[in-house]
Image (tube, rainbow, N blue to C red):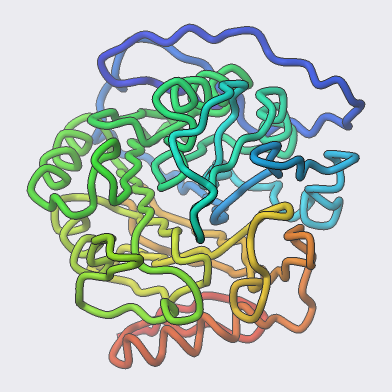
Length: 369
């Protein structure tokens, strides 16, 4: 059973929003509840493992500035993909849009390459129906409709039993298979926990580690597109914005006590590495972007990452399930395994002395000493 705790505040669960269209209910394996205390005995010894499935960026369509919503929302999660999302203790994703009715965007979308996404609040129900437990809102579209839209998004995600992470200075605690787990979301803007501020991020991770046995981070970081496939030890800039150094940030966070890092933001998959026994997935790419994301080339390569951790947060085993986004941005199972092949190539190229090999079928194998 999964129980969610929110740091320094008591959150009340609001009523579940009913969709106006029929949908088959697919509830997560673990239920979510909220109380106002932290986990007891954060360093307790167990023989348990936890399994996490994780995907990248999600936009469920937008009704701003024009109407780009699906006629039937069930089509956003095709049955074969929905089935593949099941079976883990935790299902994580990055919600790169807003769930609000607020009419005023904080962005001037009349300018080139400026986008604002807004989905109906009732679409939050879609996330719980396919089994999501944890959803990051720390990204560069979180404030597309200002602080009102940001707060609405968090409220609407929480209201359906999915826990939003990514608010500044906030740590979310959960209990998974009797293992206390902490979650923190980071991005490159100052309304998030910032990836550029290594000192503050380190302090936050250390605080989380005091109250949890395993610490999992979500990071929205790096450039975008085909030119952002590779992980390099340098600060990345995109449209003049400092978007952080993903390698430096990730390794510093593991040095501080983090156990798993789930990256997203570049809109393409990136390499993975095991650093001090901990898995870093530098980018999970796009998972779902209905009529919003480009699906050209590597931007259409998608995946579901499955990672098994032991009670100490060490990476035990993993798997990449390759997906391909169709022209509408809806994920489809890719039996040619293009994403697993791509991630293996990038992993070998970016970390030639690394410990990971990814088979064409997606098995993530740690090289033995």
